[in-house]
Image (cartoon, rainbow, N blue to C red; front, side, top):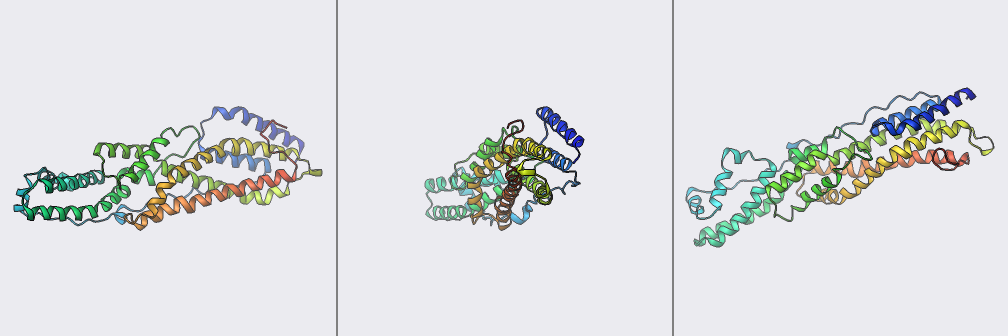
Length: 341
């Protein structure tokens, strides 16, 4: 490469270093800029890769568990008025009760279990008492299905697990801790039925506002797609770079600067956050993948995002770093940040 071109590229890198702190680019912009800088220094053409496919969260109907209803005859219903259970049953049979959201329906079922027990304890009729206990046992067996519908088909969880318009950033994830806590809350209530509607809806709103799982999964796709695209070209071009007598050329030094400026200082920190959130959420995903109450489409989706796609992302990182390490080793170039010896 002519000396004049190398000097011009060196000036360009210095300008980027001065300006990098003034931008608010997200990881997609950083990846694109990283690729543009590398291809410019190498003087090659590399089009932007096709955007990653959408997350394709399963259709709600494919995950919904229909639950058999119980019929109460009028004579039994009038006897239930002696307990608060009668009022609860009446509420369920209103138009509003029949169209309740999954969160409202789940809390209703938890409350119904409590009222069935309390009514059974207070009523004198042995036959009705036995029927109440039979109903409670049957409703208890149905509770996992209502919990599964809550987790899989709520408007808030569908958004949190399947839709996000933003990607992860190093300093814009202040809601991540609350989102991870909300996810743990949803997991916990399957075995701990003491939950209020207000508490449940508050945690669902946190998940909806953050959409952390979808952000993590979209970000890992973006990183893997870009790095695989770049690594394919670098596999051909990096071995061709000259390092006379084992010393780096000016072109290689500029490439090292670009690598550290973008990959180490911008992309790798986002990857670190991604790994952190992935491992913090993984205990819940592992339990849900093995949970018999949850549907196969939902568990297949989780397994793809948390195992297959995450492994693909990790492999893309490893292969990309290995390419650069091989070049630096061949050219006896120390792995230091730009401007350091």
